[in-house]
Structure formats: C-alpha cells, structure tokens
Amino acid sequence: MKAYHQVLGISAGSAAVCAVLLSFWTAQAPIALDEMPDPIISGTTAPVARLGVMTASASPPAVFSVSNFSRKTVCLVERGATLTSRSRDFFAPPECESVWPGLARATNWTQNEDGSVTLSTVHGAPVLTLIRGKSFSYEVADPAEADLALLMVP
Image (cartoon, rainbow, N blue to C red; front, side, top):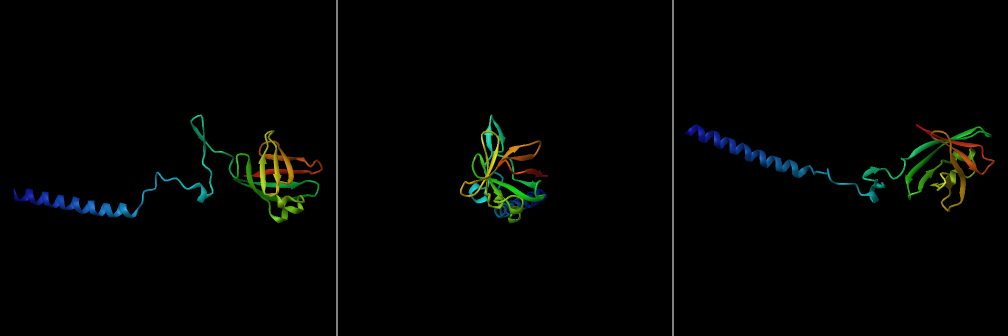
C-alpha cells in the first residue's frame, strides 16, 4: 500500500508541475490564429466575397516595361496598391521622362468601364490612355502619336 501512495504522490506532483509550466509558457506566447491585421495600419484591402467564394478585390501589384518604339527607349513602371474599386497607385521613376514626357508625373492607374486604362497625374490630368493588348500587355490609344507599349514583367 505504501508503494501505491508513492506512485500516486509522484504522479500528482508531476501533473501539477507540468500544469504550472504550461500556464507560464502559454502566457508568454500569445495565440494570434484568429487575429486579422488592421487594414489601416498594414495598408491592405480585405478580399471581397462573391457568391460565397473569397476573391481578391483587384489584381496584385505588378511591374511593367514601357517601350517607346519611335525613340527606342525603355523604362520600368509599377502598378501598385488599390486606391478605390477602379483606381490603383502608379509609379514611374524620373528616367521614364525619356520614354514619354509626363510619364514620371503619373500617379494614378484608373480602370475605365470600357476596359481601357487611364494613367493620370495627382490632379487628374490624363497622361496616357491604354487598351489591353495580347496576353499581359497594353498599347497606347491616346494620344494617337504615342508609339508605346506596356508589357508586364514576370
């Protein structure tokens, strides 16, 4: 009977020590499985649910190569984060001025209802109007004298 009490005492003591150590361990490691990032702080947009399926509200940011065929110049631009349901951030570095005058001042990528895209300045002045070409490319529709193409870089 004495051995039975020793085994019972050691088991109960081990369980108590494990419970105390486990409580200290879980108190220091917060569980963040159900937490969602704050969209204001992280600069993200929440996905839109359509017909019970979660889909992204817009295509992801992308880098495009802009080619001017008449001047034989090229630069890289970036279509960035979603601003509104039809509008995205746009960035062209200063060296893009050699590809098309005013391209470096464009800050907004707006998807129009007819499928075309307008690149405009912060004040809303249009710089270029693009139409979708084959695959992942865009061609300039306005101004007509612009011999430009945008090709998405993988």
